[in-house]
Image: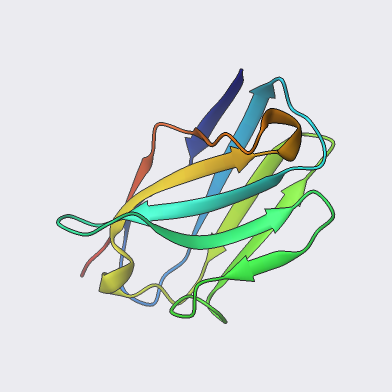
Amino acid sequence: QVQLVESGGGLVQPGGSLRLSCAASGSIFSPNVMGWYRQAPGKERELVASVTSGGSTNYARNVKGRFTISRDNAKNTVYLQMDNLIPEDTAVYYCNAASPVLGWRSYWGQGTQVTVSS
């Protein structure tokens, strides 16, 4: 089992910044992929960004250039630095982890609310 605990959400004004953190514990295997998804009210959950244990990153088109994903493998923690936030970024953000060693089963955190509003 893998447990994921997110932190760092909150209320921020447009143009502001937030940093999300996700700490993983349990049966962490390498290689793996960790990422952030988000779900806004009435919308489907979508990928925001992901990073492999080797450091390769992938971003959704609408956050590229504004968000930066990174990870600390020694701490089993992944971060999402969000800059120049816009109201459309408002959503619940979920941390995700998967590994081919575990059959690519997805593990999810409980989610953290990000609200961008003036």
